[in-house]
Image (tube, helix red, strand yellow):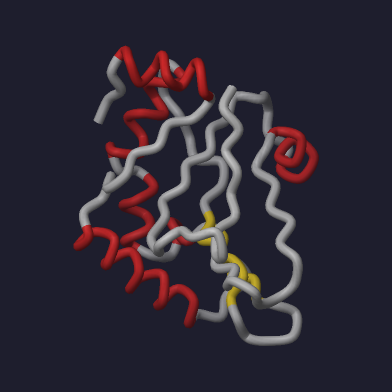
Length: 149
């Protein structure tokens, strides 16, 4: 998938794009099943809540799960990023966030260069966040705010 001139203009104006139904219900169901399998694993990449066995996030699932490996290089994700950034790209971080609504500890989730340069030594501030929502997003389970521009 590649972006149209109108989509590139929208991105330049708003700073984000949203693609509802980018993946079919069957594809999303595969991701849900694989997410559940990943969350059953006990690996260092899988972070759990302090006082329970509930998963908070699973880092680098693209390295140990075939479905997430395929997702991480899927043309419907990579193509728009290449179009926006103007060339080849690499994956800096891949994670499955699992924060349950109303449960667990605070969730300080920073997705920005300031965090990445300090924590991960990212070379330069040319990065893009991509989110694939595999569960319904509501004000109760995913209070994300997108600020245009």
